[in-house]
Length: 171
Image (cartoon, rainbow, N blue to C red; front, side):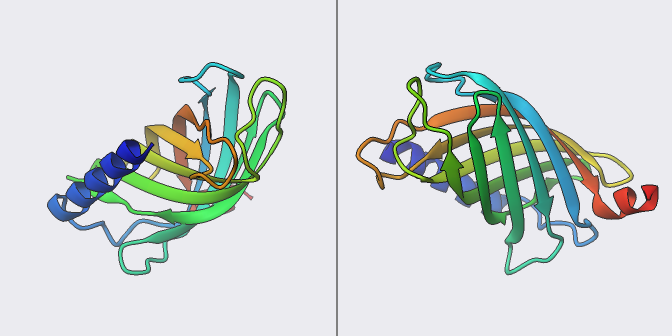
């Protein structure tokens, strides 16, 4: 587990130090995601669906966001965290993120070990001219040793981020 966290920290450091600075013209986003929950352990696989609000406000390099996810097996995750948008040219955006979540849904197949879970995610997305994004992400959720057990789990997701102002124009 510590090797994974060390690798993620090193990767984030390299991405932040080497990549160009984030574009200032990105708006607030609503991000819809769908994908595969528990792809690594395969104890209680299911479809994962999530909704996020990603703010355009920046605190140093970090942007706050709110996260809600539901798994087809009945589990839910709710939380708020931070992300960094790192641009490689105009189109490619790499967004590492971290969010503490409140988890519900223990069952006989998969018990994540504690009500507090921490999700770290790496998303790679293509940014369109209208600033919407289509991306793929891999995330890891674990309780970081808060519980007696810490099995952790991974998710692979397809993400679509829509500028909030585009949504408000629809109504």
